[in-house]
Image (cartoon, rainbow, N blue to C red):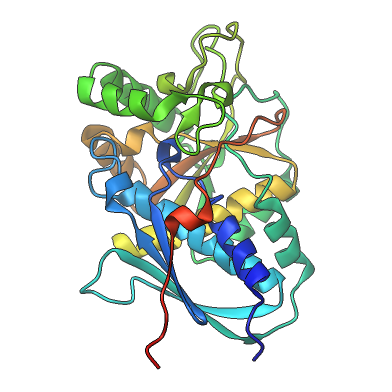
Length: 324
């Protein structure tokens, strides 16, 4: 097996850090040793109030692992991925081992190219339906990684989920600890390497919509605008639950997001109901029998928004030298 050139590994790690994370906290670290890359959870960057059990942080690390894998595969290197391989080390989220050469597929190259264009679009979307073929492609993307997508308009869960999003947003507005944490990570300057800069936030909504978007991600310097009336909402689910399922869901979520980007779709997250215990329990009851919900996606067509910054790879990378 030929080992990837340093430039390919550099590109793979640059892809990894482009993964999404709550408030762009980037809760990951990477360890590179010969033909193995470890993805580790950075506990110092886990949101203590919104994500005390690191569920969203593990989703983010799973997304980073997927970006690593798809970049290496697009460059002709097969990989074997193990999730949470060591029960004694819960912070070791994933291990990717290079496993020979392979011929990359057009689909892999398409997804790898989308990594550097994908971004969370917090702005109004167009009132334009996502066609059945695009919806089917996103479903297939989730299944490819052992997850599943459920479109809420087709399941009858749209209204109760939208209600839980509004309820969670209302609870968070009156929670001083939550607001302080959100304020720390948002409204950053345009060149901030982490957090959400003000210019990446959306305008305040004109009137109350069916779905409530994060108040902490509003840019009050912009005039209020109407948002789409009923955005397409999708839940990313797994059959199982727990830390392993959360990492797997992160990989499925990222394949969905990159597929959406490659198809010209805009995406953003509705994380609020996962971040307050009361609404999280209600959400899990609502999906009982369907699977464990991990995240909610808002999907549609919109205008490109500015990409948020990322810390340089060297800040999150440790290179380990083999003893032999």
